[in-house]
Image 1 (cartoon, rainbow, N blue to C red):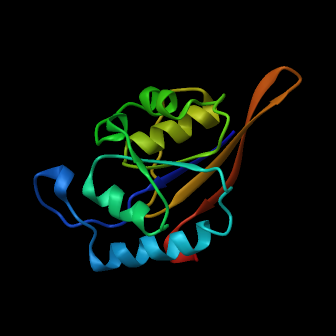
Image 2: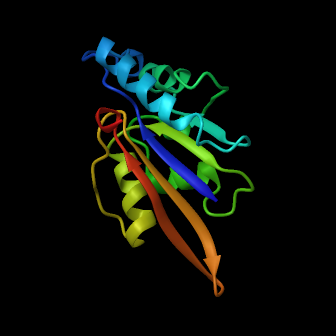
Length: 150
């Protein structure tokens, strides 16, 4: 299973948190990353987004259908994100557009199996692949990309 974690692009400050929109720079970040992602995404990709406006706007840059999932809201838990995507057994690849620190916690759980933290840059993706080898799950980090690198 492929799992892509995409942190929302730069957003305006303010409250309430769920209604914060992307800045002009954030819209450019989302567009740049979408241009890189779109030709690489499998045709059967399932796109899941937080209910926050900034994640929805980030995902809209792809021009594809995205499903809003409450478990991906700010303050969510890594274990709930992994359950929402069906890791590692979902029959399709999944792209999650979400928030820090949750996405960093998901990344570290996949890489180490422990509850640790790391930071995904705004607008960046981490692309994981889960595969079975000799009866054991292996997690491969296929790509890390940030919009200012593209």
